[in-house]
Image (cartoon, rainbow, N blue to C red; front, top):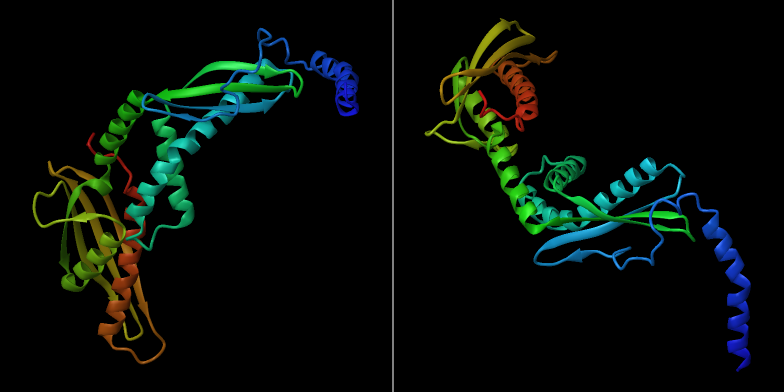
Length: 278
């Protein structure tokens, strides 16, 4: 026996009581039957049938809490596998719009990933008694993913922003307002058309105050479904104010820009509202 081998053997013998002692003092070691570490610990699997991953949580001594935490971490790891593909699709989708912030983009990805993982199931658990760590294995079949994808598409198609929309503007400066609203709606991803209207945005503009230094306008918006049912109504004021010499036309233009901005900010919040039930 070499000196190196003898040293390793002595080290193993010396450590053995400490490892045994650590295992015996782990309050989670009695959660499940004592088995060797499964092959799935720390491994991601992507094949033709499923996606699988695992997660862990440091032992707290409370089984329900440890199982919930390890399962949550496993779901997060599984989401990372899935979100790679979603991220690529979202990047392609959003590069045409300069209005999508990083935080908005991230929230969309997280929402879609969580929706697709509804059918994911924890199929095994394990406790590492030496490191006192609780593990959970989780997987989802490709069939369930496909079903979730179809459900997601169905839900997206029911949203206001996915509908073929027509814009009809009447009242003061209708041509200018049509141009302003069309530009902003397109920037926010709305699908505008002149026919086959699934949703119609009816906008009426009025000048409610016109003075030498101040013009106030008001937009009345009504959103109708294809069946002519009104699903939303609101009024938006706009102000054109100047202490320098500006014409009435310039003040009206400023007021119209203000009111259309207020209107668009409200409409954008409705973009992901499902309207098929109306």
